[in-house]
Length: 336
Image (cartoon, rainbow, N blue to C red):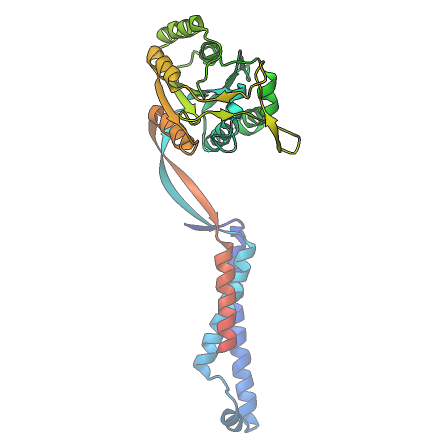
């Protein structure tokens, strides 16, 4: 349906179109009679192209409708359509992100940590009405938010951007999966919403705190409304070094252990599979990081509830079509 932002001026534009059309016809007919009264019309028609009455009517229509189109651009033409869409219920999603030193390995471009963050950001920009939490962990786990938030741009993504290579080198060394699960479970509200933990790690556990994993399993048994997805990242077949970089991002060497040997890291799918079985969760591994975005989407859509069908109005500015039509009519006017 077509409508205008300044609908009240439409009647004046239409009156102006009619006026221009008749003024143009009057002026051309008056010119024709003036030439005929001097006896020069026949001579001029022999040596130049003088428009006949039909042509003048067509030119009058072209110039008047062109004027109409230009004026309608000024009063804001809009096109409104109505479409149906599925109304989906908001979820609670807690991302648990491994920030241990091994996540800086570059078997995934640009590295495991940055790739995980990039794909998380791509997903979050497409979410709507979902409550998000963020837990980071290495030797210990920390909740980056005091409560779940729906403010993605001002709060969530800003905090996510703070997690970088310097952060990974600052946190306590190790990969304490059990502690991270406990913090993630405690992040959820008591509201009746779908609740999902998306756990991102390379699974290379340095701190085997099995008692905390057992405690997390106990809490999950009590909170049967929480679904757990463990997503492994990195090449599980090859060992990779952990580069050191300067302020310009150039590699200056590799991380060393206490004995001066280069630290080599390789993801441990077996640990993650074991934890997934214990917690009743699902384990998925992505060796390259290319499938992370699809994995995230698949997990969320699996738990997304459709609560109804609604209609919404879509309004588009169509000024460019009126402007283009006006210019086309002016070109026709000049060619006739």
